[in-house]
Image (cartoon, rainbow, N blue to C red; front, top):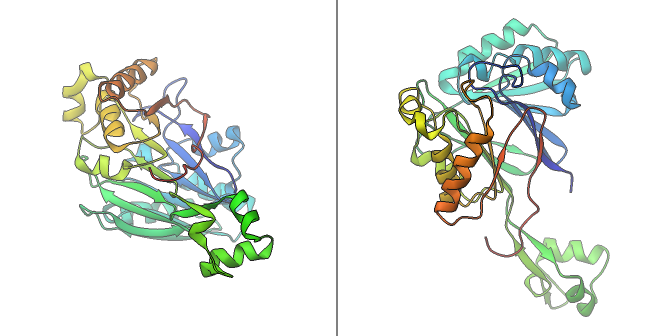
Length: 310
């Protein structure tokens, strides 16, 4: 299996700092890449991270605030430089369609850009197939229409080598059994175990809302904003953002395995303070969610596939 991992290109909320670039999160997933919320300066961050732009086949934007999409023109120009004539899909909420279309026009790059608007609904909306996995989106609660994304691999099965050997099945017959479900009296379930598909979730600017837990449900890796500390909860409510405590509680309730916190306000020079608040919230619910405080240029692997039920 090709590697599945998140490359963090920027973690600043609204305003970049000396150590945090504007937003930018690249997901490597089975030979393709999806770029989420590229803010200003992401093209340079991609160079620093060693990210190859030709691998990016889709750019997903959560909403039209510029710290989440102003990097689009630069990324498109980088793509045109690396592989002239290539194509890319630019996705965002329906509300942001014209904004994204104009960003592509401004780029004036030699890239074929297809802009897609996703309806902002209170249930998951199918967006696309990404390397055999289902990309969906759902409306969040922000000052402008915003959506969060969920990438979900279909469930599969893991073969047991000892069971295959005992049944005398090897080589091409293994694939045939997988396709047909039965071979020479041996059923697929006799020699394999169910394997849940991996799930990645991406949720940026939003207030606390049921959609957050829904999008994060059972995620192996989730990126979640935590703009404010709990002591600034009123600011979070007023500006339609999450606190670190709210992020930790949401991830714990959703059964997230690894939570990557991002989108930090400049008022917190050390984001580890937010990480500690999120970890305390996870512990409060007795959950096993691992909390990672994302930093620019971090690489966060998607946890290995789980065997059996969740």
